Length: 296
Ligand SMILES: [Zn+2]
Image 1 (cartoon, rainbow, N blue to C red):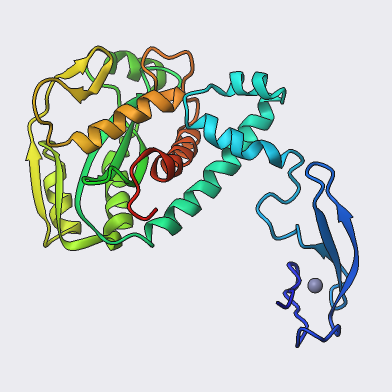
Image 2: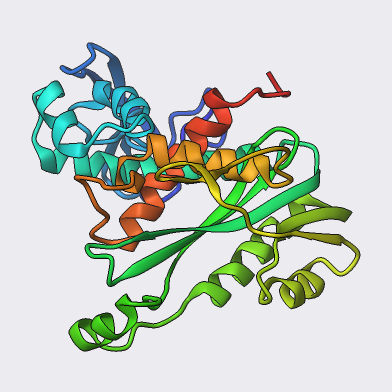
């Protein structure tokens, strides 16, 4: 394999040639005792190593990544995790952002390797940023048979009911991004669904037209909303067969495993973007370890 310079993209013309890139010693990384080869690039006069293009480049505590990945998808708070691992809370946050972006990339790569989905459920889960006066909606699409999460979006929405007036008074008018995010999600997952796919959702009047627009040959089945069966677990429905079980079960799992979605929680989301990254970590963990996976 011929090595290319990460800065100017120079490459030796053949694997035997040392015309442009030459070896320049090595170093042993202290955190995991790994030997990394250094190289020097003649055209741009810079040096780099086998570690330079890796995703963990410049991380001093890369060994904690798998732990953070697992625990952030298992309902542990950032503060508790910092305490348990004896690391700074800022480190936890930085790694969560890093893992969020990386997990999102991996999830998208894996999604393209699965067979096209023939039966999909979608719905919105409500949570909030900072205060109940600033609600958020998480729209998620789940494959019915396997409960695999195909995609999700986090949208800001205005407060409803009794909180609406108070919210406007305190924070001003809040934008509603639900439609935009729903359409973005549909656009994103469209290539991973069969043309005549079945889509299932509740009877939200806004869904019908969007489904028709993005999935013209699909069949849209809608179901009446039902009461939750467990107090505080609105997603798991009481009594009998739930046609949206895969989706509601996935939502219940998110509520149980992503600490900032717990009801009556100690932790809340302060920034919607962070919730999205946290959910990206959960999505990969869910698809890889928590559901029965045909591909494995
Ligand atoms: Zn170079």
